[in-house]
Image (cartoon, rainbow, N blue to C red; front, side, top):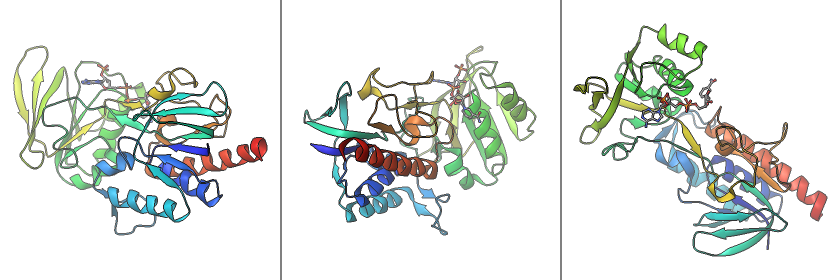
Length: 307
Ligand code: NAP
């Protein structure tokens, strides 16, 4: 039986594992189906402190993992597909059908950015297609780019991207926005943002990098090409909570709810860190911070109950 198991290997999971291993709790980390998490799908990371020249996302995650291994964390290239949290020790089942028990669990399974499912969207991810303006906006200085979505994320990202881009097209499938009034007004007042209403994106064009978007007006059926070199998706994220069913309290958007100023979930002994419990900040550094807090919360809880 494990004392503590960490689910997920993004910045939150690996920081939790680092602190837990340094507390001699020998955490087992289930890396999940995307080891390293969302950062492994980006290129340069320029906003993680300590890397003045920037660092490639996958390398940052490899370094974090190596740091955990140095202190005794072990890694399983597997994911937990079912967790029975009804009694302790918790019973976890992996995608390979293995089972194990744990006194405490840190959930750092992250959230997955939604993509449109276009034929060439994933092929060009990291080559002009991105779901993170904060991460990648800087690379589009003086270029024309597009954002798809009509919610707060789309408004926020489009507005943020005008710091770099010459022009930002905001492509939305309807003629009204879902975003809050204040965010809408800010975006609508920005003369570098051009709204393209009632329009969907049919595909991303380009051989090795984004060279345009094939778009279609849903009212008229008219198709055209939008000349852009960047395409940002802002159509929401899905927190990865499937393995827990309804056992943990979630908010309306499906994110895990933590208790007060802690990482405790609604089940004692289960802690949440990173994007699975954060639909607001979603940064590598904030995820790492909550990973640290989850490890400290789990350590204290284990000391109290299993001393
Ligand atoms: P959201 O509110 O769910 O909005 C998603 C947007 O994407 C909607 O406009 C939706 O269009 C569009 N969309 C979804 N699927 C699509 C598809 N297949 N094709 C084209 N368009 C599609 O998601 P979000 O903007 O990420 O926000 C999530 C939550 O975080 C919200 O509660 C939001 O308020 C919050 N948030 C807050 C802030 C802030 O306050 N600073 C910033 C970001 C996010 P329809 O409108 O037609 O459905």
